[in-house]
Every structure is written in structure tokens, then in C-alpha cells.
Length: 230
Image (cartoon, rainbow, N blue to C red; front, top):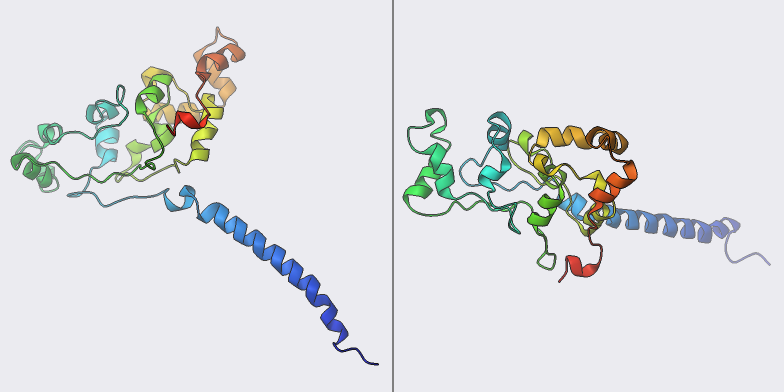
């Protein structure tokens, strides 16, 4: 008696199983990357008031220290934006004539006693608590979280700032720690962090063993939930 289905159909269950496994793998891989801050948030660059603030000129070409504008970052949870008066100190009318047109919004805000509505770039969820002060005090440079700001005409988010990304640093903090007097020297920091860890230890602490240096730098950053979600 002839079979109900042709023999070639025997391979269909195998092909179906392979397709299901392959499709599931692709779906998991897609979610693993495309549903994360690394894809959705890195590169975020909102349009700022006026023509924005050019860090490449101010922090790079002019060499302004981060703390001139973010003046309370060493003692506060937040890296505050400068007041209009701070900006006006350099950009009052007639002071820098070559850029007067670009900076008219600063003088307008000063004259009308209103704030400049800068748009926040680096955002964390409400349930995640982050404080700049202890990180700066521990020797974590602005570069590690914000990238090479001195080279950015327009600031964009450089790192995902995800929980996994933060925990990687807390588990291996020595990879991102620099001398505390260098945290805002971003050119130096970039070169320093690109140097292998063993060479950094020898250069900065030639009289200290690598093991002792590692212990001195670790600072026991917390990894428990309550450290950030309290």
C-alpha cells in the first residue's frame, strides 16, 4: 500500500526544528543587543538652546576645567549646569564680538532673568541613585563615564550607563581609577587609561607592589542592590 505522504516530507520535522532553533537564537541575540541602552542611548544628542555649547572650544581649545561650569561636582550628587551669570561673564555684549550672534541667547536670558533650558543628556531611571561626589573622590574621571568631552562640538552620550556597565566598573574599579588631582585632565586621563594596568602601577607607584596598589585603589565599591536602589 503506498504511503500517504511522499518520502521527501520526512525531512520537514528536522528542517522545522533547525528553523525554530535558528530563529530563536536570532531573536535572543537581537533582544540582547537592540533592547539595551548600548543601542538606544549611546549617541543620544538632543538639540540644545541657541546653537548649543561647544565643549571642543571651551574645554578643548580654551582649556577650561570641567569644574568652572560644573562647579559643585566634587561635593554634590549632581554635576550642576552653570548659571546664566557664569555664561554671561564671558559673553556679555561687546566682549567676544566674533561669536556675539551665536551667543545672543545667553544675553537674552540674562536680561530677562530667565534660565537657559539646557536639555539633559545623561539620564538615569528614577529608581537608580547616582552621586558624583564619591566617584570623583575615589579617582573616577569624567572621561570614564562621559567620554572625551574636550573633543565634542556637541555632547553626546558616550557610554550606556546601564546596570551591567556600572557593575563591571565596581567589580574591576582599578581599570578606571586615576589620581584624584587628574580627574578633569581628560587628555591625560585618556592616555593613562589606554596604558596597560601593570605599567600604570609601576609608573605611578614605583615604591608600591602591584598587589598593594590594587588594594589601595579598589576602595570597596559596593555591588549590592541597596547601593543604587535605595
